[in-house]
Image (cartoon, rainbow, N blue to C red):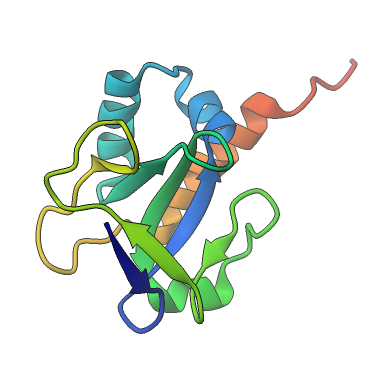
Amino acid sequence: MALLPLSGLFAAVRLPGELVHAAIGCEEPCQVAVALRERLQGPVIHDHRTTGPTYYVLIQWHAGLVWDYAEAAPCLYGDTYLGVPRLDRLEPPGTYWVVPPRYDGDLCRPQFVRELVDAGRRQLAPEEPE
């Protein structure tokens, strides 16, 4: 594992596992990986050590400057370091790539991340009485 600074190259959106699983409608790791690969089309890291299941979605660093989902899915950038696993680390235990980068500079599009967050929030929101 390497600690990489989140400035200049990329930022990371921290997604709680509950939000991701609600958006996808599943908690099974293989199905989650397939769904994230299809929906985000970029690299995603999974960590389960300190805060329960947590996903880190890598996006362009400048998107963090205008990220407007801080409460549900904070964007980490600036003076923050992210623990990044080796590229061949594709399963637990420990931190691993759910979706590894496909090429140098491979990142998720912020709009795809917003759509995933919105889908998860809709699923987790209490139903409004009619």
